Length: 114
Image 1 (cartoon, rainbow, N blue to C red):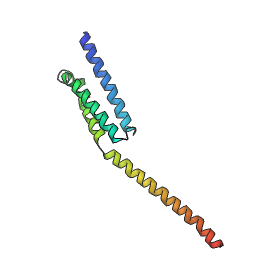
Image 2 (image 1 turned 45 degrees about the vertical axis):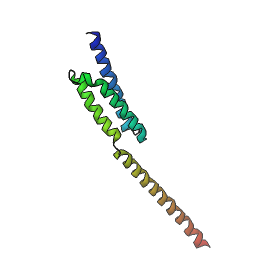
Image 3 (image 1 turned 135 degrees about the vertical axis):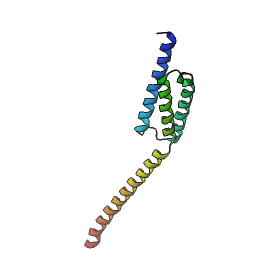
Image 4 (image 1 turned 180 degrees about the horizontal axis):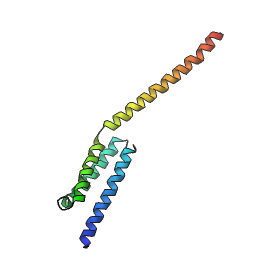
């Protein structure tokens, strides 16, 4: 194997690992801040620019670029952020209702005793 082929393979393997790690962070909800998502998306765009020369000759590079494009779109999607905010609002409402119900439950016996 030529030195150039080894380097090419190393580059593809590196970016494959990096994109997989980013996708895992996104799925785990560790990229919550939209600003951070935009910055990561820009870095992916830079990486895709570096991978562009390999796309025509290497099917692995083609697949990597397609999956990175999909990851970039997922990063820039606000759907997951909105869903998380809605869940937090529902949790806060449930907590508020539970506190209110508990207070009402505590006041009624005090009023009955008085």
